[in-house]
Amino acid sequence: MCELNDCTTRYVKEGDTVSQFDSICEVQSDKASVTITSRYDGVIKKLYYNLDDIAYVGKPLVDIETEALKDSEEDVVETPAVPHDEHTHQEIKGQKTLATPAVRRLAMENNIKLSEVVGSGKDGRILKEDILNYLEKQTGAILPPSPKAEIMPPPPTPKDRTTPIPISKPLVFTGKDRTEPIKGFHKTMVKTMSAALKIPHFGYCDEVDLTELVKLREELKPIAFARGVKLSFMPFFLKAASLGLLQFPILNASVDESCQNITYKASHNIGIAMDTEQGLLVPNVKNVQICSVFEIASELNRLQKLGSLGQLGTTDLTGGTFTLSNIGSIGGTYAKPIILPPEVAIGAVGSIKALPRFNEKGEVYKARIMNVSWSADHRIIDGATMSRFSNLWKSYLENPAFMLLDLK
Ligand code: CAO
Image (cartoon, rainbow, N blue to C red; front, top):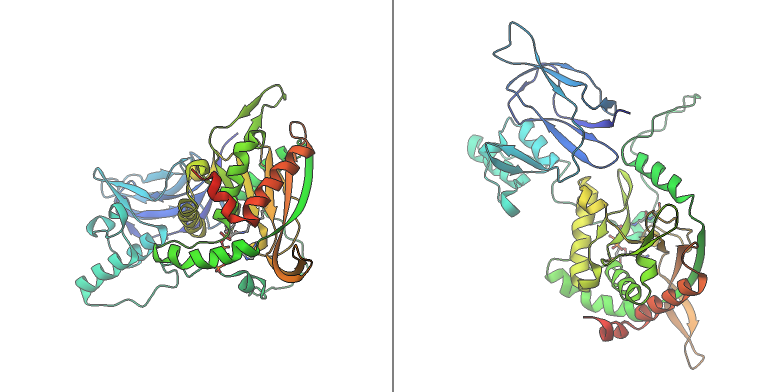
């Protein structure tokens, strides 16, 4: 069967002049998204697809009339299979030009060749500022800030998220049903979740008192921030899970289709369910067992930034061995998480809420309570194991100092 890619952004229209390596469009498969660049200098004669159309791999994408072929025929750029690697790289005369699609768009809108701009970002990445500086030098013009700014605003707090969500498109009641194809990353969700249906899920829930962790994070947050990293609760949840997985390796395992063999994974590549504009994505933090809480936070920041830009690559999205889902950053108390095969366990946490609880002396205090819901593959994991793992995870989070004893 032919692979399909969805056209998600188009940078050119018919009649536009393009140079080699100029961006033509972005396409997205169920694995990754990629910017397609022109192989020729010439004029766009025909576009074969509209935005959101499905482009077929190997079929024409655009016709480009080149100088050499002006009086004969046009060259064709075909839809490539989306590669499974980083997709913000572009080869120019043996050199790589690094820039996000938003920066490429800005350059294109101002007729600037990326190859002429010196990038001030990491590894020579071209930033929005570099384009603006270049333009200022060329024309003396200062561009107003683009609505699709490169610097992302801070992510919304849960409070913001629970306020009514503005509707970008006015809802027009047509009275007619609407059918649309399932595309891009949603196709992955269909495949993964259909496969997950074959797994007999065992569910287990508990509540965790995060009063101490809330205090600790308040202390550490400004320190991490001063070192350029936003410290949420997730890095602690991941580290505590990894310490637990060292004691219960069956939860960080995979089982073959016929259930004959279990493979215990050496790495704790912990996936994080991420709510992005493209839908649910689950990138993973690699080797959590050898990372500090700060390193996990830094990696999570990187994944969140890429997720918000729609730029998560295949390396980040594959190889997970265990998953945590923080649905509580949006809302809710309980969940029924679905295992991502070939993994065998997943946890979902709800919102941290201020609730009355009793201390050891029987006095009521204001506790910070979060619920956790685990699902485990009951073919190879029994309820007692799940419960013991959960108790250990919970004890690390309720008494963060315990973690110190086991941190390497
Ligand atoms: N309860 C209360 N506050 C929470 C919280 C929770 N469960 N989770 C996060 N917060 C707080 C954070 O601490 C942070 O607060 P500060 O601004 O004071 O630092 C703020 O909310 C924003 O956090 P965040 O969401 O940016 O970061 P995170 O590391 O906590 O979560 C991520 C990252 C990717 C898990 C989250 O953004 C997300 O996408 N969650 C949705 C997951 C999802 O869709 N799950 C369903 C999967 S099945 O379809």
